[in-house]
Image (cartoon, rainbow over all chains, first blue to last red):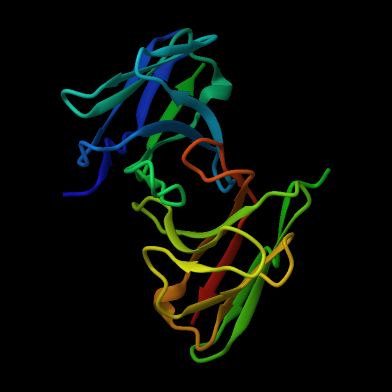
Amino acid sequence: RKEVEQDPGPFNVPEGATVAFNCTYSNSASQSFFWYRQDCRKEPKLLMSVYSSGNEDGRFTAQLNRASQYISLLIRDSKLSDSATYLCVVNPRMDSSYKLIFGSGTRLLVRP
Amino acid sequence: NAGVTQTPKFRVLKTGQSMTLLCAQDMNHEYMYWYRQDPGMGLRLIHYSVGEGTTAKGEVPDGYNVSRLKKQNFLLGLESAAPSQTSVYFCASSPLGSYNSPLHFGNGTRLTVT
C-alpha cells in the first residue's frame, strides 16, 4: 500500500462547480499535511496547509480526518484557472522534518 | 528575487555519461532538497541538506551524489547515467525543516537518458 494515495482523476467539471478530492495516508502518526498545486510541466507550489480543525482560504477548504486517515480538499465555484494537478503531501513524523511524502496527484480539468 | 534556480532545464545523456545539476537559491534558506518526479508517482526525495556542508540520503539515493559547499547551492551528480534515471528533477528549499514551512521549488530539469 502506498503511504499516500490519491485518485488520479481526471475530474472534469464545468465552471462554477464544486469539486472535492480525498487523499488517504497510511501512517497514523503523521503530523502535518499539505495540499500543493502543480500546473502542467511546472513546479509544485503550496496551496494550503491542513490543520486539525479544518481551514479555509477563499474558495478552498481543507479538512483532516485522523480517525479515518484522510484529508480532503474542496473547491467551490471552480474557475478555469483551477485546472491543475493537486498533490496531497504528508509529513509522517515530527522528527523527520525533511521527509515529506507526496501523493501522485489528482488532475482537475475545469471546462467552460 | 529569483527564488530557486535550476540549471540546465533540459538535458539528454547517453547511458554511462555523467552530469551535474545545479540548484541555487537566494532566500538564505537552510534546507535544500532534490526530488525526482516520474509519471504516475509522487515526488520522491533523492538527497537533502540541512545546512552548508551537510548532506543526507532520502528515499531513492542510489546512483546520485550531492554536495553543498555553499549555503546557496546544492549540486546533484549522476556518476554513470542509466535509462532508469530519466525523470524530471526538482530542487527545493525551505527556511526550516519541511515539517513546518513550505517548500520553494525550482522550475525543474527534464533529463532523458538513452
